[in-house]
Length: 112
Ligand SMILES: [Zn+2]
Ligand SMILES: [Zn+2]
Ligand SMILES: [Zn+2]
Image (tube, rainbow, N blue to C red; front, side, top):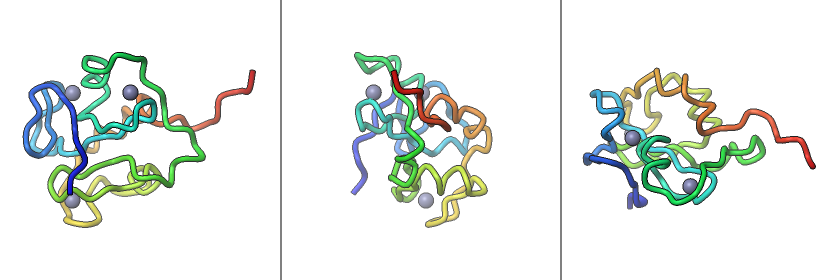
């Protein structure tokens, strides 16, 4: 069953008001609240807290949802993949990866 996905003007395949091309079918779980959003801008519009990035040590956890077949990919699998869903073959927008810094922190923050 699909986890709850939040977003502005969300469609059944998780496109949103910001990203709504045919290929914009992934939702991303935010590290801060553990909730799926269609995109970071949807999180920032709807959540009542600042976004937090996935720490590198959690990159094996499910964080990317295919809006076509509801499979979850880990951060690592998503970033290492070729922007297609390994379960159903749906094409993801390759441009999403250029926004990876909005979701995934490649390095651990320095300890205070
Ligand atoms: Zn959040
Ligand atoms: Zn959005
Ligand atoms: Zn899929």
